[in-house]
Image (cartoon, rainbow, N blue to C red; front, side):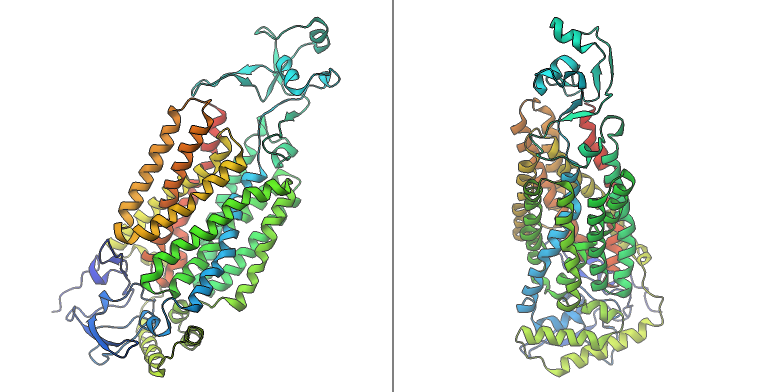
Length: 570
């Protein structure tokens, strides 16, 4: 009797990691290896026509579902899959470079989707408006000194500040005539006639100041952000399914069109209900607006270039988008026009239908071999590579054989991520890891408005840390490994975040420096998590798998705006 194969680890595990240094991820996927031939060898023709012999499990980093070679077949010693073809068409040639630069607009779109609400819902010092003092000749500070009680932070300490929601209930004509000064015996009441807002730091009226979402309505802004993450859960699941069922490009286009519609709806909203609905729509577009393009580009790049491409796209383009965003808001100084300016460009994603190729791996997994080969021919032509026709024929034959074999098995689903103990463990760990990342990253980004300096400047400076964080990964990720860098950077973020608590409240610059260093650390963790999922989750369920893992992050991030809002209580 043949020995039962071990599917918990080694080459039979679809997420097997050969070693931590090189992070070679092997995906034999759902094909079953012959237990009697665990060391099956195959001979592969390389671009220089030299035959190389070796175990297939130690040569590839990403086997597409239904396009894998059955290594146990004694009758086929020259099977071929997508990774075998990459060296022939070019692993990082002209076409891959073009695709790399095409990630730029989608990086910008993701930055706009994630952080636009920060600048739509800005709020600074605000106090009750007292109409009896309108003709007093006093400036705003002098009015506050005689009409607004002072409050002191009870937990973190700091100097007294004007209460945002209470005013003295006194005869202000008498106060002015007698020159009376406030004291603790004066009665107080909630604001009766609206609020006075400081615009010196934020420059323009936001959705909050325009609609008076303060005091008893202060929960509107964090609730809208929580609704955004609820939309992300729906979008992650739905668009992940669409991407695996109908293709990466249709899902990518649909996702960004939804984002464009959401921004327009935000700009015309005249009630909290419509505003919250627009944030829900924007949440649907979140993540997949860039991740689908990110995955697609990585699939066409050779294994030795993937770390560089994965991190440079974020380092250059996402950093530019997040750094530029606050200055777009600063320059426009109108939250409605800002919403339009950052959302209408997303509709240009429809051009991806003509200029971005569909995922050849996905096409192979769907049995659309001819279309996949046509795309590969385009790559070879643009990369100026001459490919022997036998290469395509071998790929076609191998895929047909694999499709015929897979027809006997159930269709791949995201539940297959829980099929084996090792894969189940990887999926659970990825889920927990991403939940931590989402909570910490979003909290750090949104807390820039609470650092006591210009939100435009601090947000921009904090965003610039994305560049050195990604360069660290480009040079050290493959050398030090994912786990070591992820653990170290997350602990660094925790240390610098906690260090801000020891800084006196009047040391805003030092607090901002520590918070920005913490942001730098969590940026490293965020980008490792983004790449980790793309490497460990198999092709046939990759979009759905990443969507489900990221969904855990969205669930955790729902509480993020409330955590940031706690500063108002302390």
